[in-house]
Image (tube, rainbow over all chains, first blue to last red; front, side):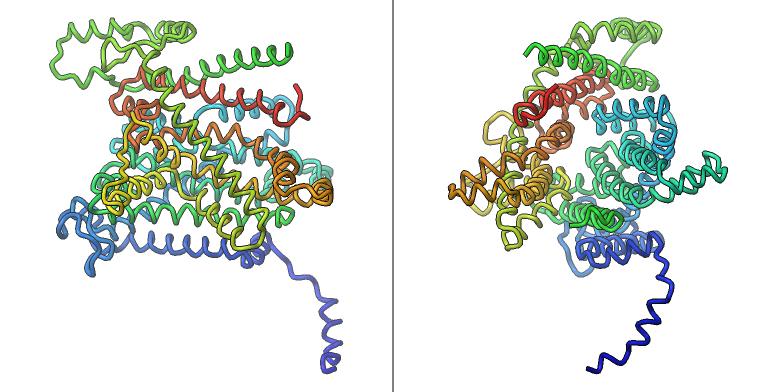
Length: 306
Length: 313
């Protein structure tokens, strides 16, 4: 058959060095096959672009009231309609995307900054250090996190004289109550990796503890850390939305999706569009991050794949 | 039996210690905030303010206040409301706990019932449209937060159902009649139900391929017997292990649901008190939540060996 001819090139390929697969390129190759994760990623990209655009431009200022009749349903001039104060909902959804990104990414970073060092140290040094850190983690798991976070938002904004409350307070309150997942995961990774041959070899070569942790153990635990951090994003976004919905989060003119849902809550019977727009945007965002997280978990950990 | 009782006793002591410990943190945090509930009262002379502070023991040094508070908690007395003078917190919160527990109980039924049914059906009809519909519903369900489910529920049951049926069916949010239980319970239980469904499906798929299930089929047993008595009993074990986090989630989730549906339970009290700066109640509700979470986890641990006889203490 005609296929017999390219025998030589095949042999040539066999002698080539295998393509270097970095952690990210390898994960990307796997995630491309996961349709749900790709949909999630697409939604997240749209969210990011919307947030970036909202920095420089929104159809109307997010705080501007009475750009038209209050409670006006969606129309050509205002694709998502106007809210109870006559503010353009599309503009506010766009502004809300930026807040969502800030809260989500900010929390993921802070949670990692708290959890990674604690977990690395606990797993690496074992013994008393591990006992103490693990004890703190277990106690922390026993407390109702949502309540503590609520109290923290309150205490912090008073203590830091941040009235009106800002995004920063919400990020800190969230991170202080939800760092345990990352810490516990990194501890397990660190505990397992420290016994591996390459760490042993590096130690024989005279690497100090700090170098071992930073150069050898941390990079090899990066996959699961990224997965865990991804799951922290929707949790933080939900926390902010819920706080603002109750009126305990970001103050009134801020276009937080949770606050917008609260705005529309009382006019739900005759103007459901006010409450639908932010809740749908919020649900889509949470779904997208959860799907991407699931996809990343399968991509980084081939054993987990079904 | 004696061992189990001893175990429960030890755990109860541990729960009491943890509860007092974590509540202490909240106590100390809240006493750092400048200002108190009395600052909102405008017509107030220096003397009445001093009298009020004295009445609540707020004029004592902080360590003394703390000691008084701890000894109060250990005697089951959480003090008096700062805003509504004369209202004692412990009986108030006990009453509210029974409301929250009712909603939580029905939510748990929704979670476990719906989750198990969806999971088992999806596993038995693997890779058919039934499976795809159930699995997609689960994937969507665990991402949509309880408070969004609650809003949609209110919109659907409180408004559209009323319009469509011409007023025959009507749900008004609130508390007091049995008809007002299902909608909040559904909203609270649904996100966790999808979690249970995913877990049940995965473990059921594993179990129905085992040898003893195949043997059961080969013996010619009726499908219902094979599925329920042979497969499901073992497939349930992973589900049982998440019961603890599940109940914790439902307890804290009540915070969200009660505020949306206007249910006078612990969660609503918590938010109302924070906004009113009634710190005594805030600390009290927190203490109750911490104890509830501990007790719920203890209950799950006690039930474990009954559901899975391989586990012993």
